Image 1 (tube, rainbow, N blue to C red):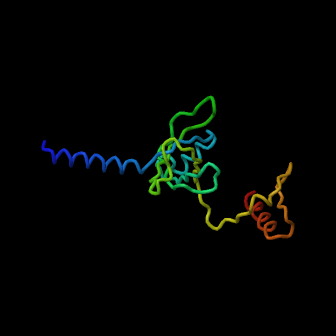
Image 2 (image 1 turned 90 degrees about the vertical axis):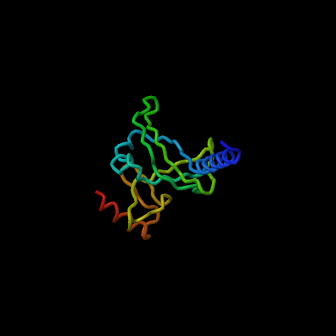
Image 3 (image 1 turned 60 degrees about the horizontal axis):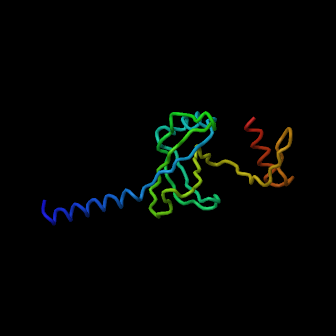
Length: 147
């Protein structure tokens, strides 16, 4: 091996290490009750979107995909581990950094969305706070469709 070959070899190793440092994995847990729905939505195939959010859940740091669903449920906590991979192009994620993970199971197109702040939960029903508003009409219509 010549000196120039050794230099080229070091440069190649440095380039590989720099590329590998961009992508990052995040391990998070969910209650075991969600396992069947995750598997039904293709979670074991890695097709589900995962968002990495900052500590306050106010801004999205990166968007990735579910890579692994652990095959063991933690009996002490009743949770299962999941791992998502993120491209980390903007270098927002670092090893050891605390992030919140949001797993997207389904997206409903054309669904009616009502702000949670207007919903009042009672002992026997859920009501919309602002009577006569469009929220009340849409929410009542949605309740009829889901029953």
